Length: 136
Image 1 (cartoon, rainbow, N blue to C red):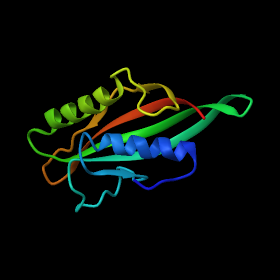
Image 2: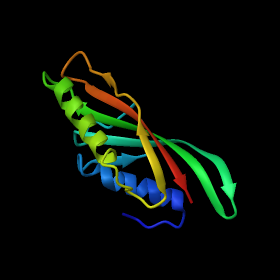
Image 3: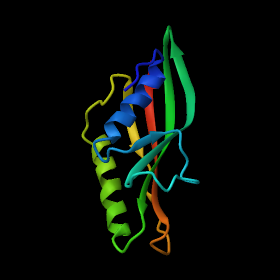
């Protein structure tokens, strides 16, 4: 995991690293569209959607990070169950009641949105939105 100086970047790095507990292929900054067919599946794609300042107190800043997390698999007869298992595993990573980075005060995952492709020649997806309240 490369080291960066920004606290926000370190939080994203920690998120990507933590998601490798679900599957080893986790890519940052990729969209679900135009995914390379050579990408090992299952894969998790992470995109930072927004970073919103919510308040300041001295040198400390309270912010809300919003990230999109997409799980990608090759479609087959077990796709629905595989996506359900993978999204459950992601939820479990963030519902253990522990702070996975010191700056994170709370995390919230949206409901999972599923897009199951109609044939095995395509990819299927499950999308989650992760909201992280941080203080840096």
